[in-house]
Image (cartoon, rainbow, N blue to C red; front, side):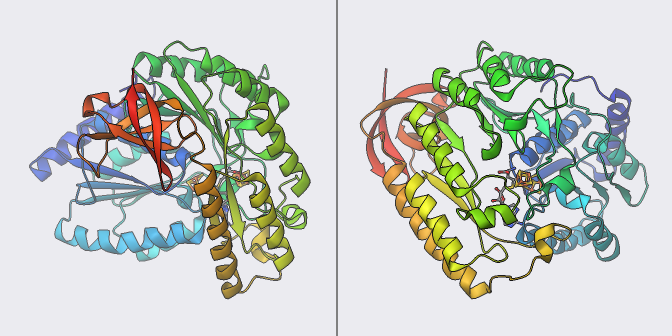
Length: 465
Ligand code: SAH
Ligand code: SF4
Ligand code: F3S
């Protein structure tokens, strides 16, 4: 547990109410926090878990817990459908266990229509809050536990940045660290700027202080988090570039590896490439979402780079950092996407040869400009393109991603290999996994592994001194 100095009074109030709740239940309450979204949501969930633990909740293993907190995502429609599916199930559980608490928060709660639907049709939901008032969770839950029926509070814009919340990390050896919140890019398909608000950068001294504390707590690997880390620093009293911040984070003693997510190609600087090239602690992995290979579609998406610009950037990065692994995000079926546009996407995939790629079917989001664009691509065409793209991405990924065969590289051991006793699973800096013989005591350590055999998308290896 990391230390904090925030609304201590609210925490004390919640702890008192939790003790009362334990009395009504006849046992110490359990809580289960489920994350539906990206790394940023996952980091928020660590804050929610920290608050619950501090208040006296034990960690529950699944949805049978006394309190279920769902940290929602709304980036694509299927994320929303998943929530409603879950709610039906939770409702029947609550009928059996009327003291059960159901809490919803996260990005989807920033959409007034969804909150209205929950209010009307899912009256068994106890507490709702959004992304901007996460730090009010202790106060809101305490109010519910003290007898208030529905405690719903969503703000449409952020107020102060409250950062010093308790946090309970998923694993002891690595951690995400927020460097900025929100997004100003307004890609025309994307709902994130609406549900996360305008881009705000944390002060570098606060970020470094958090990293130092994490290092003192045994963390080896840091993932710097922002919707667009490359535009970090705008609006700070003393502007700092992302490249400078990255160097400062690498300089913190005890930190062995640094990653970051996500990089917008339009803002990726030469200075950043130079820092990545000379700083051995920066992992040899860059996630560089391209979205489409067609300049025409990129323009309609408001991505502000061209096909040629993206290709040139990828080439420049590979030239400066030859062992880098490049991964990407691609959307298929954006309004107006023709067969020619799609061929351009395949062309970029063939030329850049990504180590892996997340492929998404375009999902219209209410309130975004693309949702009202004409020329929707028919579902059967989208399905066909998606299958062709996935096939290409996987073929190239399986050829490219294991190109270090025969080398010895450091791996951070994440734990025993579920599939085979006596073996552990480690992650290389380039994000590829390797399995090798070893005991669970290696978990959380960085060890050298000789990469001996390729298997699909991972290696088999042997630990070497
Ligand atoms: N900030 C990050 C990504 C945030 S969302 C960035 O700009 O790269 C993660 C991915 O979801 C995006 O890269 C995009 O590929 C996908 N995505 C976002 N909105 C989408 C939508 N409406 N339909 C389909 N995919 C979408
Ligand atoms: Fe969405 Fe674009 Fe911002 Fe990424 S950069 S969060 S895709 S608007
Ligand atoms: Fe989803 Fe919100 Fe992340 S919409 S992708 S959880 S920022």
